[in-house]
View 1 (cartoon, rainbow, N blue to C red):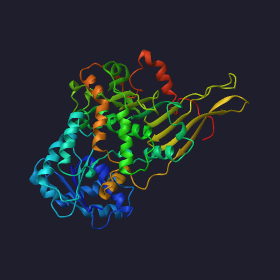
View 2 (cartoon, rainbow, N blue to C red):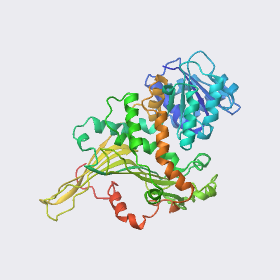
View 3 (cartoon, rainbow, N blue to C red):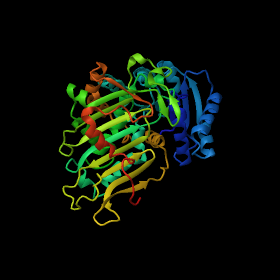
View 4 (spheres, rainbow, N blue to C red):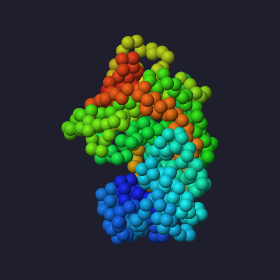
Length: 477
C-alpha cells in the first residue's frame, strides 16, 4: 500500500471538501498508519505550518464526522511545497523520493495535459500512480491524446480516472440488487423494462463555481461521466467477478452498444437549457447569464437531457434517458427503472394499476419499489410503496476511492478505452450543440426545467410517474 499522497491543487475546494475528510475517515477506520504522508502542492506562498493550519480549519468545517484524533493525525501527516504543476523541476521536488507516490491532480481538466507532461519530465518513482478527476479530456480527440501522454508515464493499471459516483452505496447497490437477487436478473431486460431514467436534478445553482462550470456545462460536467457510468452499471451483462478486468470489460461493452445519434436524432432526442431568474426555497436566484464570472456568449447549458438506445440483445427496445439540471425546484437524484405494464387486469374499472418502478435513490441513499395492491374495498386497486433506507457507509465515496488508489485496485476507476467510448457516445451531441442545431432553451430557477415540447407531452406524463410525489402513497412503507 502506498504511503505517500501528493495533491496538486492541494489548497483547492476539492481537497478541502472531499480529500481531507476522506483521509480522516480512512484514518478513523484504521486504513492509514503513522507512516502515511500527505504533500499539498499549489502556487500559494505558504510553508508547511501554514498548510497544516489550513488543513485543520478545513477538517473542522467539512470533516466533523470523523473523530478529532483522526483529524489531528491527518493534519500532522501534512506538508507543503509551493509548485507550478506545469514546471518539471517544481513537480520533481514534490514527488522526489525512493518510495512510490500517488499523485492526485485536483486541477482544472484543461491543465491535465501539461501536468502529465511535467510528470513525465520529472520522473516518478517505480510503482507510483496518477489520479485524475473528471471530465477526462474535453472531447474524443483530447481524451485520446491524454491517454497517450499518460501511457508514457505509468502503466494503464496505475492510472486512476476517478468518478466518486461509482463508490456511492446506492450505486454499488444497483449491482447488488441485480446480481444477488434471483427475482430481478431474469426480468432485467427490454421484455420487461420500458425505460430507465438516470437523473441528477438539484436545487443548487452555480454557487461561485463559474471558473470551472462555465467552460464545461451540464453535458460534460454530469452526463458524459457520472450518468454514463450509472448507465453502464444498470445495463451491463453480469460479470464473472467484480475484479477490475471483468467489471470494466462489461462497462465498455455497454458504451460500445450505444446507438450513435444521427443529426436528426440529436435535434429530437436531446435538450439543453439554462436558468433564468427565479426563487428556490424562498431565496432569489439570478439568471445564470448574470452570475459572477459567467460569459453569456458561451451559451453554457445548466440543463442537459439525452435519450439513448442500446443495440444489444438484452436492451433493444428500452429507452435510457439521462438528465441533469441545476437551480431546479426540487432535488431528484436517482436511477428509476420503469417496468412495462402487466398484459391483463381482471379488476374491472376500480382503480388504476400503478407502473412498477424500482428507484435507486442516490441522495439520500435508499431504494423504493412502487407497486399496485388491493385497497380497502375488494378488487379496488391502490398504490403501494416499499421503501428501504440504507445505513450510512463506513467510508465516504472519496474515502473508498482513495483507499483503492493507495492499495492499487483500479476496479472502480475508468479505463482508458472506456473514457474514449464515453466521448464517442456524446460526440454527435457536442457537434450539434456547438453548431446551434439544438436551441438553448430557458427555464425559471426553481421550476421543473424547460417546458415540455408539444410532441413529448405523453412522454413527459409517463416520466412524471417515476417521481415519488407523482401519486399518493396510501399503502404500507
